[in-house]
Length: 238
Length: 238
DNA sequence: ACAAAAGTGTTATCACTACACCCATGA
DNA sequence: TCATGGGTGTAGTGATAACACTTTTGT
Image (cartoon, rainbow over all chains, first blue to last red; front, top):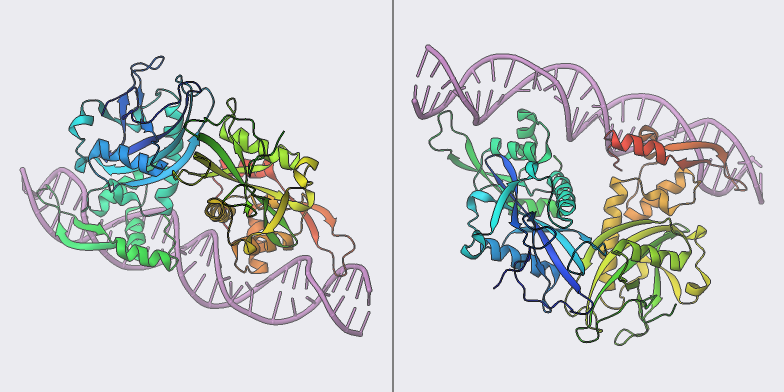
């Protein structure tokens, strides 16, 4: 495995005459210390040398875009089972100095605290707060903006917030996640009532340890129950 | 302009060695006689010879996917100003007998009654009711299903139903459109109240002509008002 | 005993549902 | 005058929003 430019793997052919290539770019969102972050890599290609870019790669001959995105996630985290959603394509003819590179953007969600970057990936990668990012290499800022928009939309429509949290979490953690990602304030009692009524949390009958205040109860997401309710037409909406 | 297979224009190069190509496919939805239809073309490529397929084409060197989709729409209808939404990519390695063809799917909306197919396109194209389509060439049925799903979702979230109707329409027409596309029944009075409350229709102070019953009032969509309300955070939801 | 965050219920408002009759027109 | 679809209001129910105090723990 070699690293070429902002591209993790350089396995796939680019046609040398046409300079035509298909790639995927992953906006890997992570959440930690009540802060939404994005996994970035430093670009080493002119004219974007030194700027941060997203994780991307060519789509190989024998995989589809989804598999390529999963491959990138596995390369970075070692994990195969990560939430992933396709957002849109980016295909302006001059978007990449290399030639004609059309990319399909995905975003994915990981809890940073549980995510060990693999040794191979670790030295090049950096978690950067979404708020702090003002520019990126290529059109990656635009890609990020689109993915962030889609994350916010999906967060209100589907129970994906759990993907950013540890398996066990308190209601406060969940609420703060929503508040941070959506950039809004939520009423504590209404938020809790809402989640109670959705019936998609399992009370673990456990509590936080070693906090210097009343310890919160811990819950986990009841994926099974949600799937069932979902097919019965549950409308998740926060 | 030549016609090659299901592809309207054959302007863009396919790499002959890799057989790598980028295309767009358009699910062009039309609405007429209370029926949702899709514009199709007969496939003349084995092993799908004779089956219907979507309108698609290569993405040329100097355009992005959006422009390619618009070009197809213009080629078919002569019109440049058509509602268009990107849905997702399709990139299974073996999805196309030609080689490695990755496509980006769009859907678009036109009122059939106002849409004259261009002479060049007319002889090859056919409007087919969505309900009647059970199979298509390539993976186009899957693409259609995905686009139909997205159309239904967007129809409830955004005021795009108007794109399928003539400029002037009655509330009944609008309601029937929703019922047909969403496959549900709506209450007449509740539907009308809802639309009144949204304040996005202009009463044209006109009525239907030559109908053998009380003529309905005609309205048009107030795009300007919607844009303003939308940026003020109006939540359109039907 | 104090600091810090967890946890809990009620009321008012708004949106949504269900539902039945009269009206205007052409034939 | 009849057939056809157009047009209207109300009452009941459920969801959402606003709001303040008590509880549990560690120090």
